[in-house]
Image 1 (tube, helix red, strand yellow):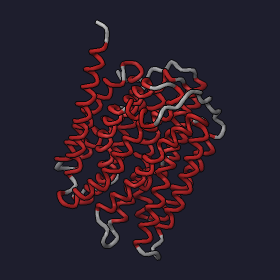
Image 2 (tube, helix red, strand yellow):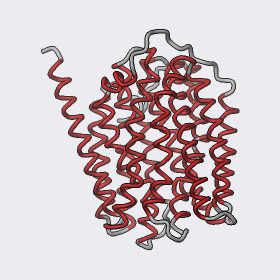
Image 3 (cartoon, one colour):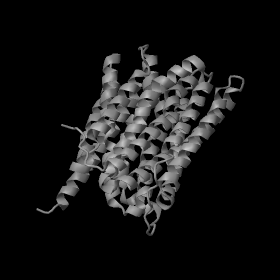
Length: 397
């Protein structure tokens, strides 16, 4: 049975819970507009799926470019100031995007403003997530890194599950400007919640070049990047596929994904620490691939929702499972930088999938993006199987 077994001091576990709740509320700044942005842009004359996908994915490019800085920030100054800085940037970025909801502005100006806000949001996301991981692992200890990674992701994608339909509802009733204003207010609540959580002490030590760290974790990074293609495709294009097929409840697919994702994180968050990250990652990737293939060929909304559930259950444990392996490969004083680099691989997949899948969808329909997601998840499973084979070969007889 995949129930969580906790042998933790209740004090740091409670602090981790506060951080997770704050992240859940704050990550709504990312989740609320995620499904509404492409729907909004596609109503503008001359703006197609490619530009809609770019508006969603561009935040991930700035996240990639800021991962090294965020990791160094967390390693040198600590996770607490890193996360708090990221939450403050969430507020500013969302306020910039409020201007994109002004109907009096030309569409080109609104799109430019939206891109600028999304770029800044990506920097905030980098600092927030890396800061949360460094802060949480510092409070809980490296032996519970898998739990910290799992709870961090559960908070993020719990917000994703709730934020997608709520964001679409706000957009449909009050427009993009009000949606972005709500997105700016919630990180302020998160800042208040983390105010009383004590800092974790940073570790001293030398700092090898960032590219050397990336080389150390490259296979885990490539695998998590391939896994991220399916998530990015689902996040950007599943609501559009429902709308294009004239299926009801366009936001429900994202909710199904998010609920399956969060359930997996809370129920199985202890497994990477207990049985090893590679084994959990392999099983998870196979489930994700099955979900993506089902989304590709689903003829009914019910089967599409089942594909979203499988994708969410599969995606759930890939990042924390491989993240545990990354933490074990580096010294404690490089933990934030290594996790930042590891996340950058996933960010690259998120950023590239949106515009590229949008162009393919323009020519071949929305199903093609889920076929690609399934193939990428299958490729990641092959990589993990190879790593397991090498790891098993190194074990003593």
